[in-house]
Amino acid sequence: MEITVSFPGNLRVDAQVGPYTVRTDQPVAAGGDGSAPTPFALFLASLATCAGIYVLGFLRQRGMDAGAAGLRMTTEEDHERGLVSKVVFEVQVPPDFPEKYEPAIVRAVQQCAVKRHLDAPPAFETRVSRALPG
Image (tube, rainbow, N blue to C red; front, side, top):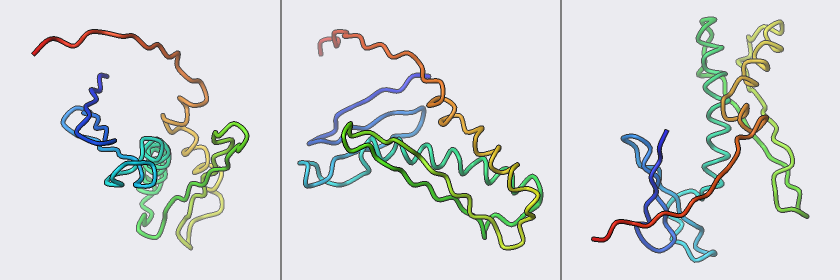
């Protein structure tokens, strides 16, 4: 996968992901325009929505109403390091959700590809290249 990044102005940073433009910005208090989520907020949102698609798939596969369901993700921070130390997924199931499926829907959420990448992080490499003139 290739993602290209551009800088459209002030502290905005956009990523081109296939046909989609993912926009980010910094809060006004940090000198940005506050026009889009921060990159870190998008990172966390990608984790939550990834878990959410597994919840949705689980419910649909069993013919259950997804309209009454949801997912809430919260984080705990290690203030000393300034990093997230814990992520908690709370799957909100419909009132008639069978208790026997609770362990299975938890296992479904654990299959989220974003979460799995955090469980076994990839190697990171940073290179410098020269932009073409013009």
